[in-house]
Image (cartoon, rainbow, N blue to C red; front, side, top):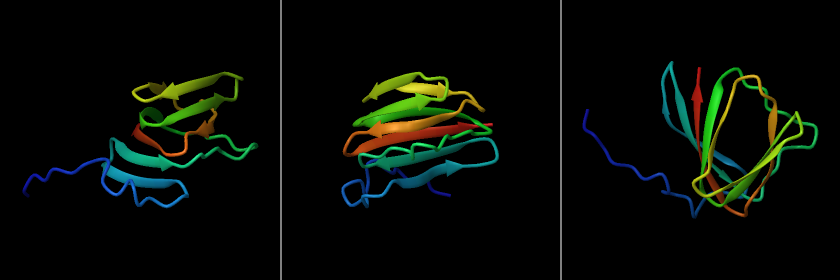
Length: 106
């Protein structure tokens, strides 16, 4: 199989206004996805409670993550965080066009 170069910012300009998830790589051990958010926030009563650790980085834009324990962290371009499995969290807000990279690890 030939090796092909791809670009994480391909098709960003044409992304719909709804959040867009694109799996870049996935196997039984890891899932890597690009997320494009447009001034997004999770519903007020919604919490992610994931069975896998999640490492996320903001590539472009900005975001704020809220944790059920009450902490809110602000993230700017280049900032990353590891969210351990079972830690309830939500997206408090994102910038107008925020591009994330998320790595889900069992």
